[in-house]
Image (cartoon, rainbow, N blue to C red):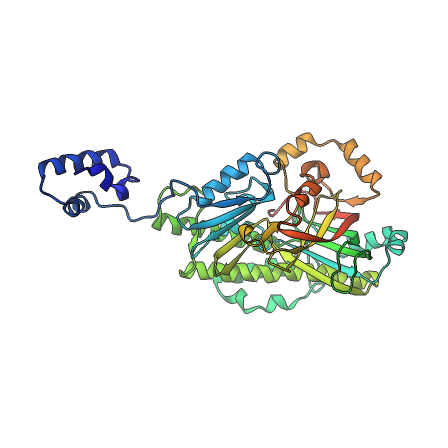
Length: 446
């Protein structure tokens, strides 16, 4: 009996060499024994640890862009670890992908009956939103500084951001899910205080000139418009929710699996904790959307503008689908016909797009330009004079930018768009920033 062909389920055991030697000796001592007899003896002598382990090889994932040219090798290696999880089905990396906490920013992963709080991320349901106004670009540019001041007056960014009691109100604060658990109830006061505000770091509110290259809604190719483009998420409440459930996922995973790296843990969707997190995540999604709506509504009212159209999309979220639980960490839904927003950096264009429903990408696209290196390295490389020259040449008014949030810190948005145009999305309009407000120092996640 060739015992080495019969030991598959034991190969991941830490004492496999001992098991293999013992099996060979037992077979030699029992020449008339069958493989079933050997397995019965091994099961009694060396019980297999029933806990889940990492797969030897990653599940398949597609790259949209070239490793090294579009996507850092570090992000590819990190995605390989994601795809070795025992609950991983398949995944994809968008061309804006870069190293993140556990799962790369720009990563998409389908998990089998499992939801991972760390794969959703710490700024749950970070979002993009665009409102288009009944304002001609020439009229906007003539009064641009006034519009910029009105936008500054109706926004609040970063650590401690918020408004006086009663200044911002929204029905989301009456959502019954705040009462679902004692933990969520404890976050409601923070959420109420920060309602309608934006995060720090890469969160922004831009006034943009929009040039359509394809028909969309009431707009036709060749039309131009003025819009407000915002990027923010679920603020302190979202960050605290993520921190809480990342910890609970780590405890849960330790009970059912072994040797899973920190940050790669999950919750079973059919477990009470999995359902609890799903509900909390969805509430943070509703809260993030409320923050954007309040920013857009209050600015339009202050500026006396009529709104013609509004679109939005979210990233840092998980969708429960037939395919599995689709985690898009810094990636945007791009199902066939779905409208998306892909921002560049503070000094480059952003894009309004339409999804093409690419199945290999799990119907996803990039959520932005993406970084080449860390915030720390971006600060080290920052060239203040080059930044000021860039913004002046493009006539962009700017407020609150940190050195790690200039165009120098990001990949070329034109390269990132080119890697997915006609493959993941089609461009509807190009948006040029003319007023940029940002959150300053990072405070609550990407």
